[in-house]
Length: 348
Image (cartoon, rainbow, N blue to C red; front, side, top):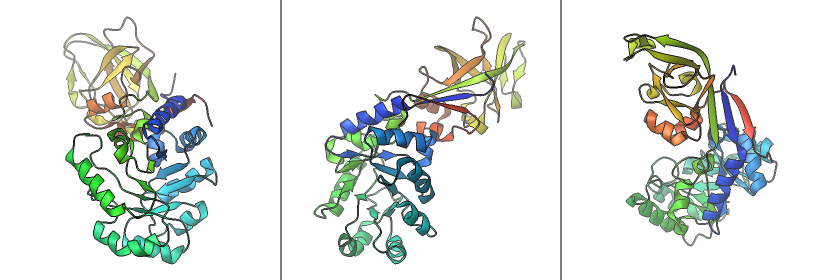
């Protein structure tokens, strides 16, 4: 193998989405496919989830929505989290996107540029990131309710911590702002789905759980990343490996150099902490993760390997993220463009 191989299991993504859809109860399950479906290919992923029954898709920016429209056709709903930004009008109109308006300024922009065009509303219930604060919502609600927004939503800040007090506070704020409006509502992504039925409302937004990540502990693994070994050498006790002489061989060791590094999304923070795998056998990273290469101690293997795996059944995205001091989201969305990507499972 001359190129690192990233394998994406569409069947696993579909199975995870179906499980989260079942947990959503009576609510419709949409699908979050922003950031190129968390780095895994929005077109392929969305088309498969559409075949499974997903109708509502969520992207971060209008241009993501334009690209997605070609994959899901004219009938699916595509919501844009950042709403109607300056310069987005042509994209929103041309691709039939649904901006989630985040401020009175966006309300004014949307009404002036695209009167009569469908829209949704995003509310801030305490995360202080996107959405209208309660006073702004109260001021514009009479006008907007008469226009029948397609959806009103908010986002939970601490849903991956079920016992966190913020969850109940945001739920109460969302109900206070939206009860008796008669609008279709959405509050929960993956973590919120797992909090239970009172958080589900009319539409849930499965995201990271569909891609095999926490907090959905029952998720099937979705990605497998195998790296080619470029060269294997023996280093003597006292010799060093990699930039900065950060690792010194305590004894004679066999070191495999694999073709991938931080340019491929394998974070430099894995230095001193990461492991690759030969089957189920762990092999520690040695020396610094560099731009294109990493050193791996394979002394304990019976023979020099041709490839080593960094994402595999023995080490999923969250375990690798823990070694790097980050989260599975960052691991997935950082996976680089030099990998040879292969999809397994059934396409739409």
